[in-house]
Length: 357
Ligand SMILES: [Zn+2]
Image 1: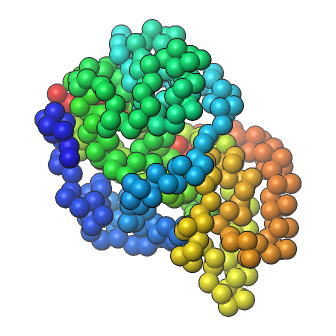
Image 2 (image 1 turned 90 degrees about the horizontal axis):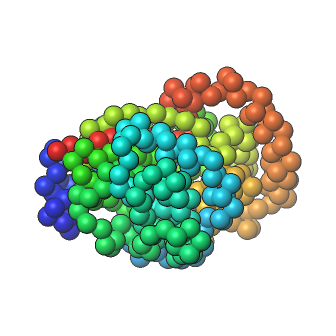
Image 3 (image 1 turned 90 degrees about the vertical axis):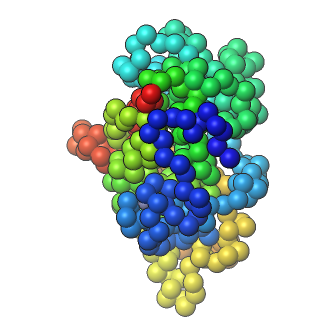
């Protein structure tokens, strides 16, 4: 149920009665199947282009998945420290006077600490007990260990909300955005980051794009679908940009896609279905974090042990050995690729919007 205060947002559109039957963004019912990844069908809405896992896994299924080993190592966040201040500074273009800031998915608290340093009054929400405890005890931050829906936060009190790489994980992004609108003051600013399904990497690697990782990621937004959804939840979209994602390496993606394509072909030639399409694969779906670095080190995650033949082992070795080479290629061609990444090809989608009212 959507709380009363949330439905009062000007311009907000009521959620479709059945999110499984109709498109989250446009309400359309015409879809096409793109592929089945790790046992999870991924469809595309023919009307608006939104891509999504269908049916949406149950809350219990997701809880079991995250319990089994969804964890992001602390070092990855600590290493990104210098970026946090820059990202908060970017947010301040829309809110130079600062104020109260909420981060949903605060992780270990590094972004919140950077915001506090820059004069914001900060609070966070984070599901991971380990990460939120670190934020509290090591950084002295106020971080609630719960889902946004359960956080003890007053309505209409925040000047800014940031939610980086969370929206693609939640069962109902519309509900989550309506909650954020309810927490913001009228005119308050929302900053979102999600993977960009229209990126060059996503197009090259398709099913094997590292961020195509159900059931961690359930929704795959683009420069058109994300603003449309945000607008329908009571916001005026101010800026949409695409940029390079963490660990983005097109050459490694291309190798991975080629390798997986070869394996599919081999399986087909042997007269068997690709392993990932078997229902059993769903139960055994490997729990890896949605990061390019982690996935590129583990490109054979979609193949069951009996399929992991000598050929595939060889391919994994090649991929690992190729990493320094592809990294060098990525660095060497950055001057060509980066402007394109800013023009819609980047793996990451960034959006700023102002709450109407
Ligand atoms: Zn649609």
